[in-house]
Length: 479
Ligand code: FAD
Image (cartoon, rainbow, N blue to C red; front, side, top):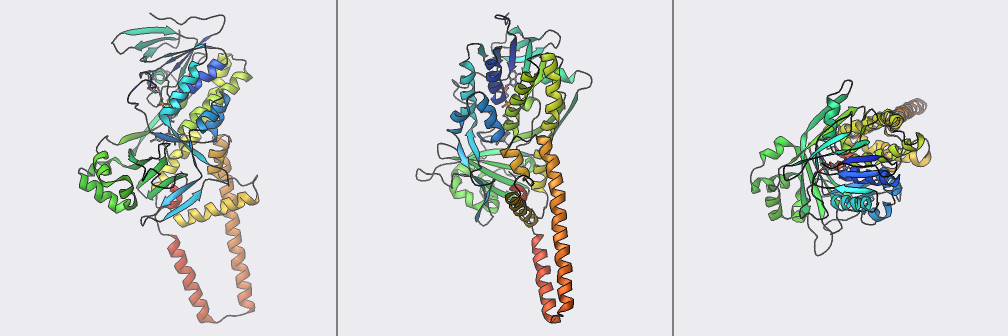
């Protein structure tokens, strides 16, 4: 039996899960001087030959960067990221159109998940008061005593006790299981009908096959593919589509046929032979959205990261939100002098509305992306929003900007977005009515040639009909 002991009067904090959020959180707790023990199911990924993870790369933005900065890791991670200044929309005909993420100089970063995880584990290990325990799978734990039971690869079990258990063990959290047995714990999980599959686009003549400083998007209503650049000059393409569509494709020829129909420009870039092979390498992966509350039990346990809130990946915020959890917790620790019995309830009170807001936003984006939205209206509104942001930078801030480039609380960003939307739509309506009234007045004063009027009306009508046409580039441009 292993037993964590207190050295001096510092409490023992057990971080369950050494993924992205667990490894970062270990640094936060170590920095405060706690005795930190990390327990991770997998072997040490820094020594492993193959690293299984949820995606090969991901988009890091402001919230995540701020959290890394708190533990002195921002520069190290950013230096190994690739700037993405805009989305690059690929039309069916292969035309590429950039849509910037924000103002000049605002970008998100493509980072390698495995490398980020390794760097964070190494950073955690540099604190003398931190111990990493790999090959430890949490089986069960007690909310009364803080006693945890772990399964080891050889089939044996070990037990350890901690003052605080921090559940960072991902969307299928074992720590969370205890919460489910308790009264007044709210929980919901939703699997979306879409799955995802990753495909690699190799370099071309030693260079990136597409322009590197973009997040490439092929929006095709129900289907969508995105591609993020890697340091080795490859792109990781992620194909999102309903499981039933994935299952319809059963032969190499059908893969090519499918790509020919929806992503023809990607075939030569990924390579027909690779496509035929790689499509069948791994089955499509599921995506789940998990919401729960509260995030704590007494003064003993708290959930963070995907364990508390798994979100669908259509806003690029899952990890960023999990990283921000660590800062929010840290801020509350300062406020309440590290008194767990005060910090934990306050953390739930403050953080639940924000994590629920980003879960909803991500799901909203997923639904919007597939709906037959009036794409030109979306793009028009995006331009209007951006223009207004330039004119009134403090009053009108696009939702994407608030979420991605600020630490505006997620739920506040959503409220503000609804308010702005109302104001802007009213403004546009008022503008339209004003133009109509003004136009009528001019018409009455100078009656025009009736034939020309009919032709103009017809032209306007045709333009309006054209505005209604899909595909829904607009919603995908939220990514
Ligand atoms: P995880 O990364 O899942 O780590 C959990 C860890 O706990 C793992 O190491 C696991 O082995 C360990 N563990 C599990 N069970 C136990 C147990 N019983 N005992 C001990 N250890 C255990 N987010 C972004 O911000 N930007 C993006 O661009 C983005 N893209 C994404 C694309 C895809 C396709 C997907 C699926 C997700 C994406 N995300 C993105 C979300 C992001 O991957 C997650 O939010 C992030 O990985 C959460 O980190 P975590 O540490 O909470 O959980």
